[in-house]
Length: 217
Image (cartoon, rainbow, N blue to C red; front, side, top):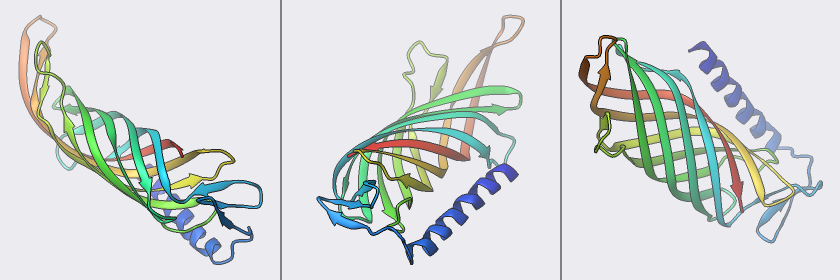
């Protein structure tokens, strides 16, 4: 919990510093051909089509019951359109894997998620801070011949991040986000004596994730 709070505080301070910096940016930015370009030839795109990929790792979890969320890996791909230097919309496909422990049993949930999202660039600085949100519907794994069986469901993310400028059409970003989803289902286990144990679960996943992304114009 303390680690997550420290990371969140650092990002908030970074966004605040960018706001102060935006009032007196020493770089003479120019607008041309749909980009914000800086003196050293680094730039940000400000409108048009783009696509990207991202990977996220789970940090601290915020479950309030007996559930303990363990490892988490999220993969994401998206297509988007920049309307201007501030606002863009995206749609895409993601995969969320979360591992949880309840009463000594480990449960794995996997969702293939179709999602819609939006991003708002807070300041037009060289290292550009942004806020984003994403709403999706996740599909669970096939039920046939599988020990894992959980329902489909809605999930969402909301976070803050930072986009780095580049000298080419590829940009990199880092974000800290809140991921929320609910998973209801059943799973079977084999105990040391060879007996099958059938269980049902209802997991509410609330956790911070750190997200690394690459975006291409």
